[in-house]
Image 1 (cartoon, one colour):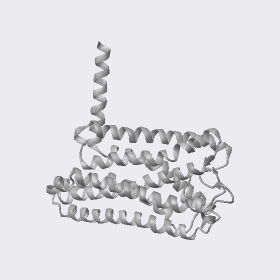
Image 2 (image 1 turned 30 degrees about the horizontal axis):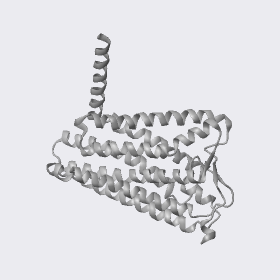
Image 3 (image 1 turned 45 degrees about the vertical axis):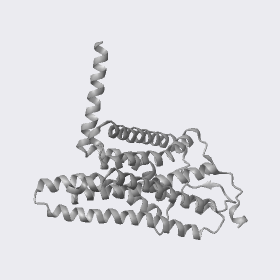
Image 4 (image 1 turned 135 degrees about the vertical axis):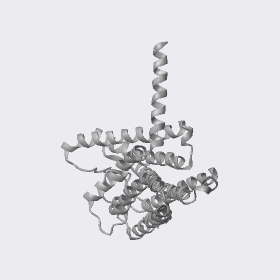
Length: 316
């Protein structure tokens, strides 16, 4: 056991997406642009929801937490990737690698449970509208959100402890642009068979349990919508779910492709990783704002207020 828990590696080298020097600057610009949009989009979404009292509802409470989580797991990866592309220094310390893995897995798992909570909220709003306020109370929303964070970081603790109990005594070059579980297991000189089973079982449970909640919620939503007599009512009900369904499809599709596929291809794995680590956190605020009249109205209200204040200052 002592041999299993010791390691001779004190730092890792992240090989990145490609070793082609001609692609380093374009990749730097792309990652930097996406991360800035992510910061502005998710940060702006949280400010809009906080500042507009009309958005102080369970759905937007979950959405503000989703924006925070997107900022969290994007920030666990993107800044280090941008810094490595800019400076050419691809070294990350052993503890830094463990921290990156912990926060990335933690926030990504929290997102799974938040998306499930949002599906339950939509189910309560559409299937039981008369009981919605008594069902989705402040206490229930807080409990679902706290539970999401507890499950997320408990999952992160399991994966981090299981991965870094292994011995890394050979090469320290990680064939990836951040510290993720599959490339670290491939790098270990210990027997990683049990760790791979842990990944499959724990990720499988988190994905399929939350996905089951989402599917059951939308099954009841679909049945309820089909019973509506008004075409306008059906259209309105579908529109309130469209943004969430889009976000769920993109997120779960990427996670299942990355962690639960039987085979592994390094190039496609890297592309999938880019998508769910930096692209999805950028897309979520766009998905929820472009299709949402309440968010659009709140944005215009803030813009008009700022414009009025600036006009008043100029007149003085």
